[in-house]
Length: 202
Image 1 (tube, one colour):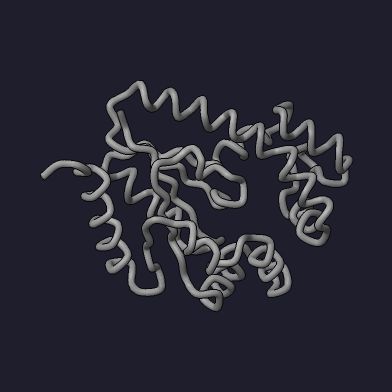
Image 2: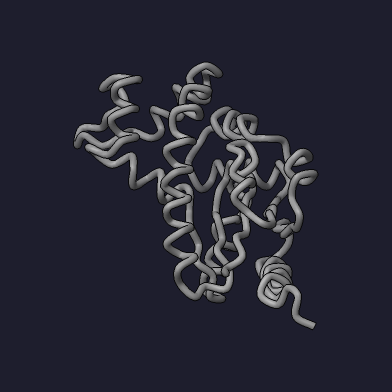
């Protein structure tokens, strides 16, 4: 049966690039963000819950969710962030477990759970091993502002909302240091891939 590996990292850590690397190697990659995006489309369960809770002020002109507006509401208010986590995490976990079961029925050597809040949500209980992709905070801040167009305050709020990197390092089993070049990161990922796919083989 395929090994289930958790892949996590801070926002703008380069985790998604590493997920694509493992997909290209032959892993099944299940993305928590992709699942959440699908369930937040109009008429889907998260969409209905968000609108019922926040009201129509979080909708764009075309009726889709304004994710940046939701972000401002959530990251500026601890109670709202708690509501969001408590409401969405069980729904997303059930969806993720269903997808894991589907992939386990196929011949994938490894199933990667690409989950930004792996430890925060307690989803590491679904995995055999957890890999942390990380960069230093200054790099993370710069990338987040450039990639998402956030102000520095918005970017810092999103970083602060996550578990500190020092704590994630304590909980992770393996690491990809993404502060260097992409080639250096891929070399680390290649080594991990060989370990994951040849575990127990002498």
